[in-house]
Image (cartoon, rainbow, N blue to C red; front, side):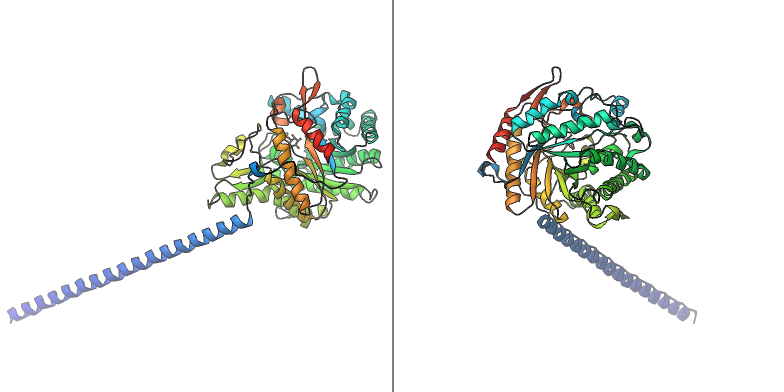
Amino acid sequence: MQRSVFLSLAFWKHLSAIETGLQKRISKTVDHSRTIMWERLVIAALLVFAVFKVTLITYRRRKYPEPHEDWSTINLDDVHFPEGFHWGTATAAHQVEGNLLNNWTVHETARGLEASGAACDHWNRWKDDFQLLTDLGVTSYRFSIEWSRLEPTEGTWNEAALSVYSDMVDDLLKRNIRPVVTLHHFSHPDWWETKGGFADRSNIPAFVRYCERVIGALAGRVTTWVTVNEPTVFSTMGYTLGMFPPGRRSLRTTLRVMRNLLFAHGAVYKALKPKHPELQFGVAKNVTLFDPKNRWSPLDWPLARLLEWFWNGAWRNGIQNGRMFFKDVSEAKGTLDFVGLNYYTHVLVGPASVSLLKMKFPKRQQEVTTEFGYPMYAEGLARAIDFLAPLGVPIEITENGVADANDTLRTEHLKRHLWVLSQAIQDGHDVRSYHHWSLMDNFEWAEGYSMRFGLHHVDFETQERTLRTSGEVYRSIVEKH
Ligand code: FCB
């Protein structure tokens, strides 16, 4: 009996051992097939993601092409411009006039930057400089008014300075040169800066008052007005990168300044257009293009699109649809009679583009790096024009040029850009003018006098101006067309 109990117990034990073993094996198999299922799912998800990415990148590559011409096969002299097309050059007050006291001179001293000082002494030599325009044969000249001269302290107006600007306009008209006047080209009185400048919306009425005064004095003789120069450059350089006054680094303030610049433009337009319907108001928009450094990189594309939207798209959306950075800017909506285009380059971006902060720019193999550090990419001018075209107003090229002290690149740079421009006009774009930056070497903001953009070389010791070879080329192009 004892033995049979023992045997049956042993049998049970054996049976349950078999059962547990079996169970273990079964659950092992289940675990295994679960793992396989997960692995398959992950692989499938990765595949779907990869296909999605490749499709997205392919779509982007098609939607945002980056054309490059084979320049060796192109006849750069084969250009055509319409009757009445304006040929011009451009300057800005702080860069040429000399001996100012404004937000910039304060910044130069505070940051230990090269001082603008006497600049081109243009305030005393403007008549001679206008003769240079006549000699070039241009029919348009873009220059800016220095607010700090006109209103050196808040509410005190320097009528003598205003009458100098008035004389300049008369002199240009006598020479059959159309004056294109910029009201704000990066510089303003320091007292206004101290109050917060464009970072504070409540400062805009003071800016409008200044514009009313200038326009009141010059309307009737000046028809084409640029309210603000390069809003994105002004706000980013001054409030994100800290290289322009007031030298701050705050993205929030940058966005606010960008919106306030739109409000300021809109406010000037609304204050003055009803009184002077014949006047044409525009903004000079710097359209820098952002391209992915690696056109197959899933990281470079979103970065490039983001920067493109921040730099260009947000502004266009603001003026076109009244929304900027998710906020209402409808006061500026539809307040453009023309748009100014300042075109210089495209920027290649990728996650390693931190070097951009040091203003070091990568380039494509076939591109040449200009002295400023960015590549020459004339093809981009057509893309910049395409970008502004949906605004539905005429385009004026308010700036285009290159820093080139030895004048080895400027002629090629000029001819390529004019060829691209001529093509764009033949494609039906309404572009009315081309202003070369610049008439002469001048004070190049944070870079001081190291960057020479002039069709004329300037000896800053003697203030002697000498036409460069590229200047002669420009003169003959102007003469021919
Ligand atoms: C533009 C500025 C202009 C000049 C050129 C080189 O961004 O508007 O004043 O400095 O660059």
